[in-house]
Every structure is written in structure tokens, then in C-alpha cells.
Length: 291
Image (cartoon, rainbow, N blue to C red):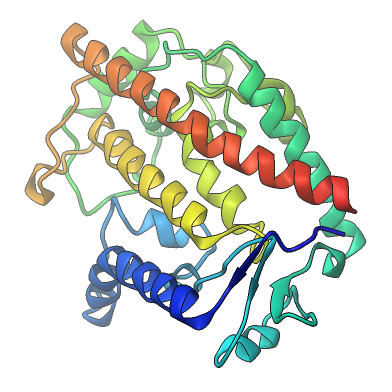
């Protein structure tokens, strides 16, 4: 069993919880306001729809594994799955994990370790969004204009070497685009193919972090969300859609300068993902070792 390394009294943990709520509100409040008006955002909604963590769940503060909170207010944490009462206070307990969750933690640790140890690739240029539109009858963001006509989008896809390694991007390719990809990702091959140059693999650090709730501290979940949000902006700026009206200048990957810019940003995200992935790996090792 993991011993509580930190004991937090209310004068410490309550300000942490409030600061976390304020940080999340800066992202979540605009999303809530839009949806109250029956509107949507083609870039940011993805972070609350594709990813299943609601704004309310993201806003809820968790101290994380190895931390015990004390004093007034700590008892309410016992209403949430994964917490246990100790002689000192309340803490998130790995021992509360069911067998299936324990197996998931072990799988995730292996996958993240494999990803971290694999060389990063930087030659995809965000073409997954283009491949989704390749000779397709449906347009995902139909309310927004395309920067190029469908025939030109198809020609650009055909002129490039598709090399997507991320299954959850590849599975949305238009049927005729899938055979053009050098790799044929399958979900079962994720530990074999995932690599830290991939924008979606780095966005998914947010997903892996919140799936470890309440053992993962909210500070790490929010850090992963913040990175995912920036990556999502670049992802859609490099797409064939025109979101200039929303303040997103296109990254024209159909041109050499645009591909160079995309790769620079991709390399930066890859570097920034390393400490976040490292923190997740450290947490998972600690939990798995305790089981």
C-alpha cells in the first residue's frame, strides 16, 4: 500500500482547490456559455466531446495518490469513488481499484513506456484531417468553409506520403484514403505504434491522465489539458478548413513553408509532452508497484 507522503491541512489544500477551479473555469466557461446559446465551437468543443471528461469533472480538484487531506471539507471526498478514510484524514486509495482497472493501469504503463522509448516521427504534416475528406461525401465541419476545393484536397493527399501511426486518427480516414497510408494501425497495435511526435498521442495524455482519477493529481490533468488545447488549435489550423473568422490563421501544409512551420510546432509539442508523460509513468509505476 502506498504511504501518504504528504499531509495537507485545509489552509493548504483549499487554496489549491480554488486555484484549480479558477484555472479550469478560464477554459470551461466559454464552452458553457456557447452551449447555453445553442452554439458550438469547431475547435475547442472536441476537448469536451471527443474526450469524455466533462467540464464539471475537470473542475473537481483531486490531490492525487500519496496525499492525505484533513480538516473540514475533507469528508466530502469520500462521496467519490476511490477515496478512503485513514487515521490522518482522507486519501485516494489504489486498493479501491477493481481488477479490470488494475489491468488497465498495467497496460497503460507499458504503452506509455513504449511510447517514450520510441523515436519520434515528424513527417505526417497533419494530413489526417485531409485524409478524412479524401473523396468523401460528408464534411465533418459542414458549417465552415474549406480553404481548397475537394478535387485539390484529393490531389494534395495523393501527392504526399500518408504515414499516420495513431489508430484513433486513422479510423476516421475516408475509406478510399486508408489504403494510401503506409501503416494500417489497429487498436491492438497501439503499444507498438504510438510515438511522441504524433499530435494525437500527445493530446491523449489528457485522456490518460483523467482516466487515472482520483489517483492522478488535478494539477497534472490540467497541465495535460492545457497542452491538448494548444495542440488542438494547431491540428485544426493545419486542416483544410478555414477557421480564420475564429482567429485561427491557417497553417498551409500544402506549401513547403506551411509544412516547415507544422514540423517546428510538432517538435515543440513532442518536447513538451516528455515531462507530462514522465509524470504519468512515475504515478503508474508507483500505483502498479503497490497493487
